[in-house]
Every structure is written in C-alpha cells, then in structure tokens.
Length: 350
Ligand SMILES: CC(C)(COP(=O)(O)OP(=O)(O)OC[C@H]1O[C@@H](n2cnc3c(N)ncnc32)[C@H](O)[C@@H]1OP(=O)(O)O)[C@@H](O)C(=O)NCCC(=O)NCCS
Image 1 (spheres, rainbow, N blue to C red):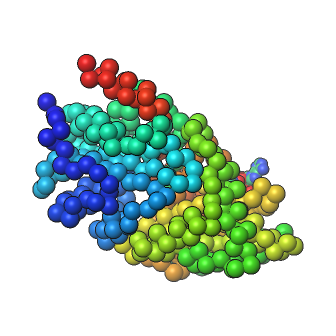
Image 2 (cartoon, rainbow, N blue to C red):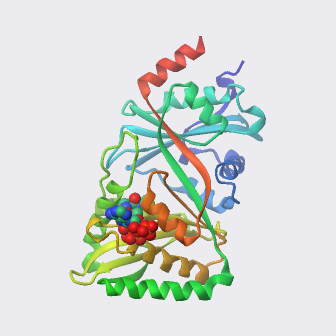
Image 3 (tube, helix red, strand yellow):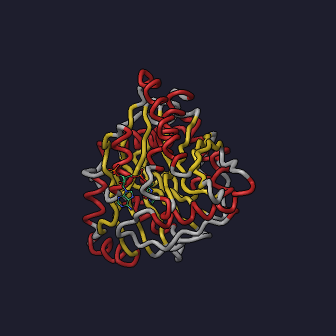
C-alpha cells in the first residue's frame, strides 16, 4: 500500500533540493517525450526554469514520489496569483511507465491538494489523449473542457528559396491592403505604440477560444507584459515576432511570435498569433506566419516548429495547414471544482 513514505519532496518548485535536481530534470525530459514525441530541451533549460525566483504573480508547486536516485513521478501545479484566474490551478501529473496505474497518481494528487491554497477552487488537468493520466482524471469525475491540437511543421532548408518568394509576395499583398509588417526581437516594440501593443495582446488573449474552460477574461498590464519578456531572458530564450501595422492609423493590427532556446535548438516554439477583429480576413495571419517561417529557415537550426491551438479554431488551422503543419498530438484539458474532486477522492479511497 502506498503511503506518504513514498513521497520524496513536497513544496514550491523553486525550493527543490539541489541533490534531486538532476533526477527531476531527467523525469521532466521523459515527460516531454511522452507529451510531444519530440526531443526535449537539455538540462540547461530546466535548470533555468528551476532557478526562477519566487514571483508574486504565479505559484508553482510540486510533489515528487520515489527515492533520491530513482524518481517515480510527480504532480505539479501552476496558478496565477495576481492578475486573473487566481482561483484556478493547472495540474500536471506524470508517473513513469512501470508504475502507472499502481496508485502513484492518486497519492501524488492527494498530496498536492494539501499544498494548494484555499483560494484554489477550480482545477484543470492537461492530458495527452489516450494516456493513463487521461483515464485517471476521468475516473475522478473531471469533465472535458478543452481539446488542444499540437501540430508540427518540419523545417526543410531546401525550401528556403521558394519560401522567400512566397514571403515577399505575402508582404506585398499585405501592403496593398494597407498593412506593413515589421520584425520585433525580445519584446522591443517601438515606444510610440508600446501601450497599443499591450492592449492588442490583451484583446487577442480574450479572443482565443477557451471552449468550456471556466476562465475569466485575462488582464494584461504593462508590468505583466514586461515580466513575460524578463522570464524569457532569464530562461535563455529569444522571442521573435512579426507585427502588422495598420498604415492608415499607425496602430498595431496583428502579431505572431515564436520562442527559441539555445537549450533546445531543434524546436521552435510558436506562441501567440492573432489579428484584431476589424482587420481579419485579409490574409494577415498567413502573411505574418510566412515571414516567421522564412526567419526560422534562414536564421535558426530548428528542425521542428510546434504550435498548439484549440481544435475548434478553424481559422488558425487553415493558416497552419497552408504552411504545411501536420497534426502531431491531441491534448485534452479536464476540469473539476476542488470540492467535487475532494469528495470523489474520498469515495474512491473507500
Ligand atoms: C486566427 C486568426 C489569427 C486569423 O487571422 P486572419 O488574418 O483573419 O487570417 P487569414 O486572413 O490569414 O485567414 C485564415 C483563414 O480563416 C478564414 N477567415 C478568417 N476570418 C474569417 C471570418 N471572419 N469569417 C470566415 N472565415 C474567416 C480565411 O478565409 C482563411 O481561410 P481560407 O484561406 O481557407 O479562406 C484570427 O482569427 C484571430 O486573431 N483569432 C483570435 C486569436 C486566435 O485564436 N489565435 C490563434 C490561437 S494562438
């Protein structure tokens, strides 16, 4: 019978003891492979994440099972503590294969729940479709709230010349419709439109389909916006964005942004893409992502460009399909009220 004796560490992620860091990183890399079927970032990336100082805007907790030299699994949570959705914790559970479905998922989650602050009333679990964790959270009565499609575009350098031509054509098409496109590195947006960029991002975040997730509108302040880029810098990632400007007003109209890490040179990670409502349907989304594709082919060694979108996001999928993305893996997010989960766990214990 599993008990608290099988728990090795319980607390904030940033206070993970040094002597289990390397084993934890190995476990996190195994989970990355399991989630994405791609080579994971190297240990430098995880070390940087672990070294991030405590923040007053988010909380990262973790419970680890196993012994010092052989970790079995973990349950972790991420919660915003400042700007919005402070009542929701996003929970991840991972147990290595020989120990799956042997009670560790249950133990880890029960222990994590004892760490979560009283403010946490909604829990979400992101699971790979068909995984043992998906089965586990369904048994707990969690309800499917969001289906995410991770897709990947293989970056083939032999296509650079043709991509360059298409990127140029799409730039000219955008210009003929009244938009210019500029490249922005590491969040260094022009000062005169900095506040407009922040408010564009906030609008776009609120426009992204969240399906049945019980979310409140996100709030983006200049302080939070800056923190985003500070964290990228501290974790040795670069942000490359292409920004569309509406020529008539000089205001931002849309953006696409990707992250690149020297600790993970094979994978370019796509972050947000969005075009403000009044400007949609002008192929701006496609034009922006084509500029990014050209940049990735010409300036990086990345072999895979990965992105996630709500499966229901048809407009985004049309753009990605045109760029040559393939559906890679489906992730499903389940949701439950904390009190219901606690009641269901009690019933299952009996
Ligand atoms: C997804 C999004 C970026 C598309 O931007 P866009 O500049 O309008 O995109 P495009 O003009 O390149 O069009 C993409 C496809 O969607 C279709 N489309 C775009 N707007 C449409 C509308 N209002 N009605 C019907 N179809 C539309 C286009 O016809 C095109 O499909 P097609 O090439 O098969 O005809 C934009 O809808 C958006 O910002 N959505 C909110 C943010 C979001 O969900 N981002 C993705 C998650 S990261």
